[in-house]
Image (cartoon, rainbow, N blue to C red; front, top):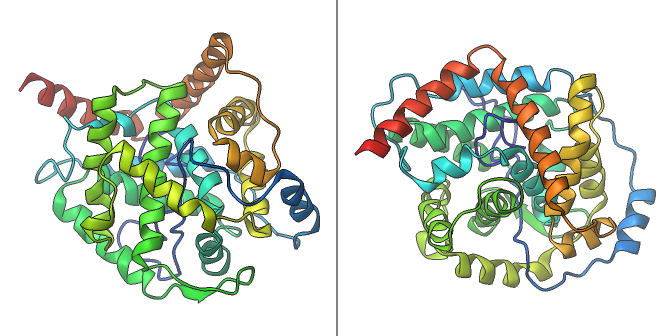
Length: 349
């Protein structure tokens, strides 16, 4: 997820909190687009893996809204030195502020986990199981800073993440392949999935972009990957280039036991407040609907029913209620107002 509904950007980009780096690994996995050709794993294998995978111990998600909101409010700048790498007139700000952002974030997490090397990095190096809420809040703070902060702040937090990435190395026990979080190819996977998930969620449950704005968004976001060390020439800069990238990567995907367990937890997290848990059912349905067919096959989910106008309205209403809950947390309204003022000022220029 992003910052739940602070409407930020990339889930699981880094193990980082404002101030000092935690020094404990990184969640640098990612996501995939809607319509490349089908991947390797079929639904029956996904079900077998779910049934036979190792036991996982997870902490509950109590405090999800409160901690996510606090991270968001603290990361939105009060007096930025400049408009940052995107700026209030950018498509990136619009996508990050869209009502569908929680769906984008969860969809991204669902698809990101299907890269075995990315998932291995999370499974072996992060505190995702022991502190899932803290993980989401830390990632939120990073992404809000990169998206809405000034350039110096974005560079500073990106440098911290790159330093953490240097320590995240290992061997995936499923494929037997080595991985490194600082590998530009894996960083690109994170970046491309983030961008695609924003496009997919906004198209289904938010404010769809025009074709020109979608291309502009993909092009604007190349700087986010560059900040973490991906060479510019590797980064897709249009929707067509993004689709070509995912079509090329798809054969490398696999649904590992860690992916099944982690994503099952995300779709049905324990410890949510009763009201949030009820909303989560609609949001979970939205996420599964937004997944590409091949990703649902890998996890073993059945194809969802067609998305009717009525069902879309119900999901948007649930997102609106979730947003209202988030907005009621300390500091969130003020942070949103700061961003709104900057966006209105940009619109008048």
